[in-house]
Length: 500
Image (cartoon, rainbow, N blue to C red; front, side, top):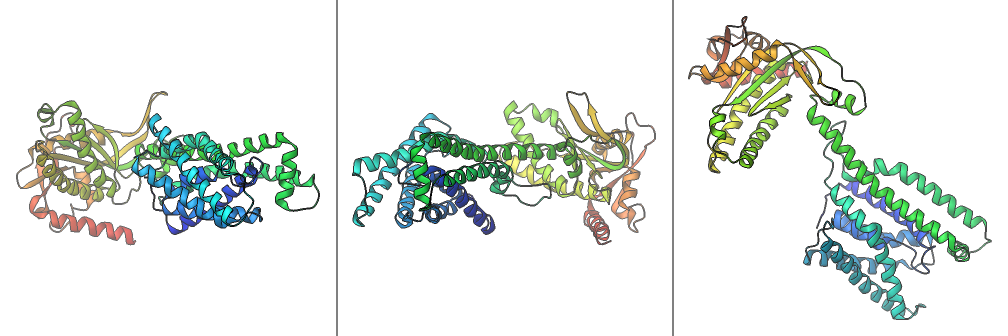
């Protein structure tokens, strides 16, 4: 059974929206049925309970109360009890029979319809007994049960089965928004539903007003029903409006999920929120010169190691590695430009130019720590152990969309990219006293380490020969014994930037 934990505010909004929604359908449903004026409450109650747990059960209890405010001759008490019993039967049988609420298979569709029939028979029987005991006028039992089941099952089959699939496919709560605050599944869906719903509500209200203006004085419900009973075509209009409202709800949920998935896909492929908003808004992505820090990482001995894997296992192994590294990179404000086999190209400075080299160095240190944890877990599962090399360089690049009209990629180009890739290769030759992190003179300068009073103790200068690069022959590596000092220096500088 699906159940989501709504916050109190979201839960209250869900209840209010649900009551307004079902009351409107109740007004239209009263034109279709002679004595049960809240169609299709049964189907909506099941959806609410299956997907929202206790909030859905509370809505089930409140729906008859909302209906009674409109049709004041309707006794809500019996329907509250009956509604809760019906939902309890549905939830119990869904769990016992292990029915997927998303009804993806024909077997689950048949089970859900069968469960709905059983719950409806139980509910109809209970309602008939309650009304008989209270001396209310009720038709004979077989006809009463048949009418009740027919009213419940009709919307369960259509559009209920479709709504189950739509809501199930879009069920996971939305995790982010443009302002990076959590956005619930329901709120995002309502953003799409409100224009549709508002239009349909206005049309429905005009429809009701036109009906009431054509008849004389009397009780609201009686006037409403009298007009509909004389004009069967109005029942068709009411049915179409009801189905249109339900379709608007399902379409809103579906479109909200698709919209969110598109925004998230763009966000994952763009280095910062500003560019994501430009792209999703249809604006052109600017090409610009920027000062950035580029980091390249690579797994040592990957070619030999990959030969030991089946292709599917290799993909799983690499994806777990990229997941671990990606979390570290995101934490330090880096943007993954691309994955190159087992390597990662990361750019710092596209989101914020402040302290980019320092963030890159801290990220590199944390990545070495993270790979040790990943390596232990990987070896425990029977995978080979591997190590990592890292190269870091700072400089001016050209950033923009590169590619053809059919396929483009936002990336950075320039000599900085080439140098950082070569520095990563040079990390294979660092001395044992240093970490496999090789930084250019520019990167060390932007980190503030060239003027650090303990420079000779925390970084050591190494000679490098970079293939294809003629103007870089010196680089720097962090001493293993000075990792704590380097971290403290970088974090202190970042805190100073943050404060002022």
